[in-house]
Length: 291
Image (cartoon, rainbow, N blue to C red; front, side):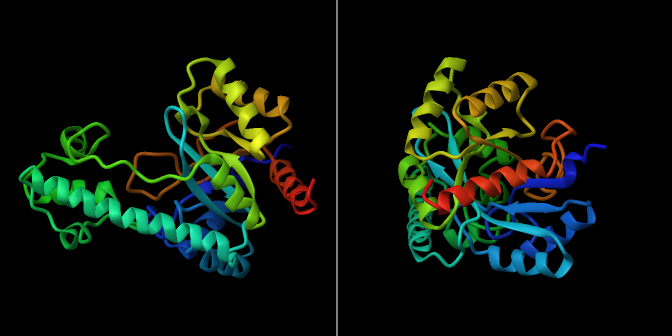
């Protein structure tokens, strides 16, 4: 009998970034749901990995140390998942500090833009928002609602904080080549997350783009994801096979404050088995041997 899709979930977030569960809590939750392995992939931070891995050892759940990095893309949005990274890698830690500093500078710039629009909101007020993890635009939106400058979170984004709106500030991102290099230096492999967000207009465009990323060191594609259609999954799977890339899958679970798939659910065929994780491990071993 084939194992359930709930054997693994290789894309999730904790309170170290924008999730609502601590690393230890999410490990226990995954164990309770019957998963065998998860990857903790917080945005631009590895701060939750030690706690999650320690809890995994306690409860008997395999925890893959990971990270999700934002990268520049010709169109759409690009995120890269790093699997099996070394949390003690100083070079990766230094680069993540660059991202954290850039995030702080972006937040201060948003404060200034809002002030120029007649919306005096201080960063101290933004930090009081009941959102979890790293301070970002959702925190600003909540503060704007609380002070009566927006009707709701979506209104704040639509009128002020969304891309192209008057208080929007572009996010600093590394190039894909830089991000993949940092992941490799930390002993990990790189998987393209939720490729539908790249907004490649035609399958041939996606194919060509993946070919470019493969030459720069891409190891895999997140084929199985809640928002991928059957047609998209087939395209991504076919392209992964064409370029000899591993296949990944996950829920992108953040907790219960967002309308999204639950941990271990919503991202594909029920015949997915632990062999997918084994293939990712094998790819990492090849990387470590310089292959």
